[in-house]
Image 1: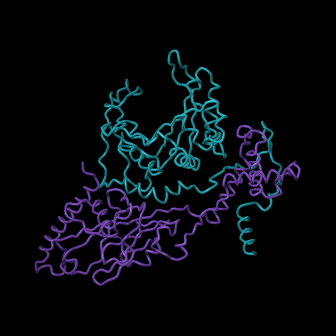
Image 2: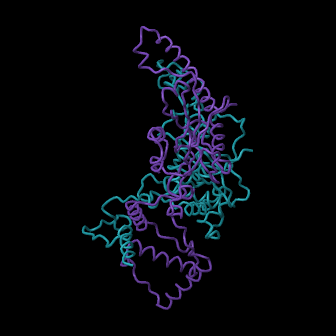
Image 3: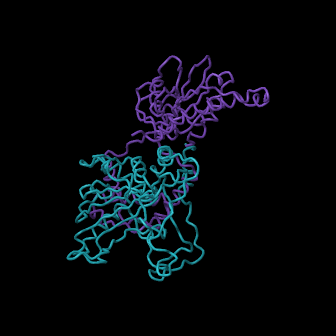
Length: 296
Length: 297
């Protein structure tokens, strides 16, 4: 009995304050809100161990390193000499646009050599939705904003992180005759990083994808398709979920009726892979988190 | 058509043959009576290399790691900060007013607040004692209906307490590796599953075949990648080395389901072991060759 009490006391000493610290200096008041502000900048970090992140570090990382390792002997040949369209020394073309001959060759960018530092890893997940009706009536976006908020819980500069942008409104860039004008809000997007990213991924893989009847996997492009496209060298895996799939997210499932209209969304898994074959390396990583792929 | 890395490995084996031949040619030059000292310092290499594949069969962790006391304290501190700073919860968006589910959420939320900030933090609820007791009873009844309160599985398996090293459920938080206890040439050793590569066979295919040959096909396995993850040169006496030098390519594989069923009389036992336990069983030369490819986690 006494041992139980002692172990409970030890646990409580780790998990709770015994007594709130005494505030000796008077707290400043925020000039706008009038709320007391602490003397120090408070930043929140991880508040629980992340299962998927641990899975990445204990299992996936090793396997991905073995699978994507490219053995290179000696130094790489120097990059191709790039010739400019116009003579750069010519005073006429000196400060003018002078593109290299043959284009930027972005699709031929070689992958960095294999090293422990650039084993492929997940950098962020971007959720993105476009609501067509918002062009006519921007209040149609409210449902999509609330839906993203419920899914991710992200807020602007949430947890004191200045780089966290929360839920962002996407505005139109171009003018398309009779339909869209620049600067009209048409969509919503969220960037997830770190713990929030792994939590969302876990929810997606465990609650949503197994319950989708007509989803067998992300469709891979046919084998004959070109590997020299900008998308295949940028290490991003994307797919979309229809509005009917969103009801399976537990965050939305609890009160589906509260949303006037659910909007489907695109999900982009952004990895650090770059160069030729980057998308394949990104797919290998994402499939390690149990996202299925399917070849038609 | 052919997978790149494996073709490279096959070629690598070919180079080894070539190199041993060229080495022999230089040795033939040094064997002239003018340079007897050099011959003594440089042992003669064989003209044959036997290539084998060994499989590092891994069972990945099946449990999350338990937090250290420091981590526990850190996480609960961060959770407290988060709880203190979070945006107001939109009750009317998630709950209809006065429902049982809202009552349950309120009760649970008060419990969490008490756990985070201590009993003195919460202000007293302005509900009568009867109402509070009725709420608690209703919530308990709801929990019973929903079948809550199931006990979680313990984090230690019976095989941990009984010390059963053959079980795949032992040490759920660690990476386990398969080691075979074999009797070869009158010597008892612990080693990874091993097999010879036949001529014209790809290394990764040979690895899969050799694994089945020694451990049976009553398990689902997956060999990671087509390139070896390491190379090991067994210690040989000079007489053995003259006959045939030996080289072992290590491959990583995962076990998904099933269990090992040793094939052949030379295998006496098998064990699923962590890195530290492997060190206690294998020879020091073998350990030096394999220690860097095993996971510390």
